[in-house]
Structure formats: structure tokens, C-alpha cells
Length: 418
Image (cartoon, rainbow, N blue to C red; front, top):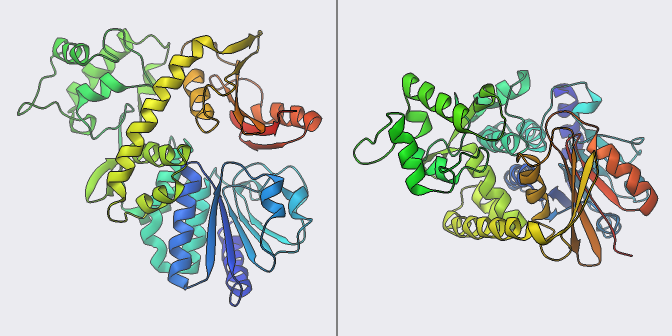
């Protein structure tokens, strides 16, 4: 695949010497980090370009592409060949989603599915491409790792990601997977949404009492972070969480990779950065997210404020769940939020529900919300078993019309209300 990326980069440079570039990327963390990498790479080339971030690549977006521009899609478009073959533009695609039709003549694409490669996120592909454009772009490798973490691909690293990690100077540690791993332990336990511990989660006093009971105290009046715990303290914490948690998770699930990034001159957990980027996009602040990714001055304070607002929106959405219309069958549950939850938030809520203890493994969570004159659907599979959720949505869209994107366990689509 690396050889193909070299040729892809050569063709791109040749096609864009005298032509304006239109870049289109997805609005999730992987798409935003991808767009940030491409933005910086094109600025260094002094290429003329514009950037658009989209929730989903709909037919209307493709029909309105500027004539005469070279188009670069990042983290999307592998499922849009039926639309792309109708336009006259030269199209370049860096994407990792499944391909379901023949590649048109006007399209050059790099997709791991074509090379039987390890799973690589859009940001990973954007970085490999940028590195071929200019070796100076190795300083953007940290964004490829954040994008990987955002797409939940950080559990094991193949050959390509191992090299990207070396380029990035990001520190990799094994540890308890509660995050952010750089924050005081009592606060992590209090605010954790991954693991529910009765009388601890959501309680400041409960989290302190929980730590005191296992013999973990403060140092200079402050609790250690996860990455500061010694082996004995880590073992105590794992045992205590395993005994008290209510989500039926395995002890092994508590240990995993932690990626530590030097971000705005501070050591940060990549998962926390990913969550903050995602919050910007969900609240329509993708430009701010890109500035944040590139560590532009003054962007962090704004993102901190957006992230706080985003978390408040999640709480409001979760509080609305009991009053929403639901249809539940043996293998699926449909949750119709209508206009009570924003369409940009419905995917986050579907993910939270799928990771909760409420539904059994293998059940499909299908959540819907209004998106102006369309309905946004976000589908998640509970656990690691179950059918391909993207194929399930595809079978529906073939009947009602619309666009589908996503993966085996997480996918989404839009269709008209009428």
C-alpha cells in the first residue's frame, strides 16, 4: 500500500500544479484530524484549496462540487461511487470504509480494503499521504494517532501504525483504560462513563471513599493520576473495580493502550483530545476543532468551553431517553428521538446506550433524530457479536433511498422524512 500511496501522491501533485483543490472530510474526530493534516500539508505546498466538513456525504454535496477543481475526499466517499462517476472532476480519495461498487475512471483511491492491509483510520491514511508530499509533515504524526484513537483502533498496532507512532514521539503506556489517564484518580472515577460503580460514579464523596478503602491516598493533598500509580496501586484498583462494577465487563478490558501526547505544552491523554475534537464537530464548530488540532493560539480556551457545553447536552439527551418512543424486539431496539435530541448528538447517545448494561450483546441499537427535512439514523451493535450493522442499514436504504456510511459495528444513514 505504501508504494500505491507514493504513486497517488505523485499523481495528486501533478494534477494540482495549476488547479484549485476542494477538500471534503467527515465531521468526526478521525475526519477532523484528517482534514487538519491535509490543511497543513497543502499550506506547506502553497496550494490553493478550500475545505468543507460534512456530517455525511450526500448526493447534493457531490452535485454542488465546483467545476474544474480537483476533489480530495478524506475519511469518506468509498460508498459514493454511483454519484462520483457522474461528475467530470478528477477525484482523489483517502478512506478506510467499505467499498461496495466498481471504482469509476475519474477516481484514484487509497483504501486498506484494496490491499488487505491492517485497519488504518482516515487520519492514518492522510498522514501517510502527507508524508509522501513532504517529509516535513512527519510533525503531524500525532494527529494520525489521535484520529486512530477516535476511531477506536488503538487496541493493537500493526506495522504501519508502529511506524507512525515512532514518527509521532507519542508515549505509549499500558494501564487502566479509564480516561483521561493524566487527571486525578478521584475525578476519573467520579466522571467515568465507561464503567459504572454504584455509589462511586457521579459522587465526589463516593470516589474519595472508594480510594480510601483500598488504601490509595493523596500525595501533597492531591490524588495520583492513572499513569502515576505504581504496580501495587494499579493491582488494587483493578481488583476493586472488578468487584464493584455492574456492567459485566471482563477484568482484561480494564487494561489497554494509553497514548500520551504533548499537546499545548502539556502531557495529555489522546482519548481526551479526541473527545474534545468530537465535541466541537457535534456542536458545529469544526473550524475551531481544526485550529485546536494544529495547536493554534487561543483555540484551547474556546474548545474547553465547547466541551463543557457538549457534556451538558449529553446529560440533557440522556435525561430525555425515558420519554422517547421505543420499539423493542428480540434482536433490535428502535429509539425515535424526533426533535428532542439533536441529530449531531444522536450517534453519541447510541454509542452510550450500546456500551451500557441495558441491552444484551448482539442487539442492534437504532436511534433516530430529525435533521431538518430528513431523519438521521445512528446504529450501534451491542458487544462484539451480531450482524453487520452497516449491511442492515444498506438493506433499508435500498428500499427508502438515502446514504449510508460506517462500519460493521457502527453505522449511520439519512433518509427523507416523507
